[in-house]
Amino acid sequence: MSSAATKLATAADATSTEAQTLVLDMRKALSSMKSLAVEYERAGKPDKVKQLEDAVQELVASYEDCAYLAEAVKKVPGAYQPSDQATDFRKLIDAEVERVKGTSRSSGHKDQLIRQFKEAVWDVHHAGQPMPGDEQEELVMTSTQNNILNTVCPLTMKPIVDLENPVRCIDCRHIYDKDPILRYIRTNKAPNCPIAGCPAVLQPAKIVCDTFLRMEIEELRASGPAAPNASEIEDISDHDEDEDEDPMDEDDDE
Image 1 (cartoon, rainbow, N blue to C red):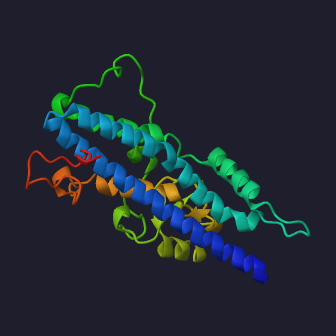
Image 2: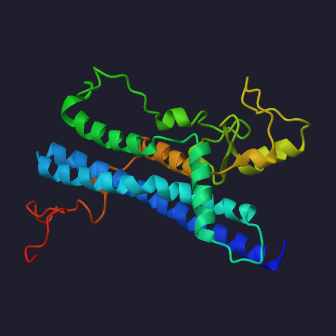
């Protein structure tokens, strides 16, 4: 690999990692906003719930594109072709973003997150009842649980939420611990997916950790019993000192 190619690959990895970190931070922020909205709904503050819903809409509008960008940037070194002419990297990245969008199976995240926010608020006073409109139309949204096909690694039996290096097969979408699955592939001829009944033949190049996998695992982790509620969110809903003080209120001087 040439010096230029090495520098490009290093820069792409660093940029992709930064984008993935931003995406995960955005998901955490959405979870915190949802928890806070639930507290506002319980407290009878619908105006504050509406403010949070509007903020969620704005944040969700950009997060999925950021996730696609994180994946696309990683592919730029492979798509780069040296030439005597200056490379238009913006055009190259845009083309990779469109390619990632066209091949990704993790679609619908934006609608899913908005629905999760609305459901959490709705369930405060209407638990067990369908939200308005659910009776008339069939829901076609894909939940995180449906995107995640297995919740433990079939080789180590560790829960996927505890894996430091989770990876997923592009073909069958099953999730594994990275080092054990790569070792399994190396030591078996034409290795089938270790999930019982799965016919996929595994190849190292098709075992990847995409941005959406980390988001889905983070969401699965957050949905567990230890998921934080609004009373545990520091600097957002801590108004024990003054019950009239509200984290969403603007300063009086503004």
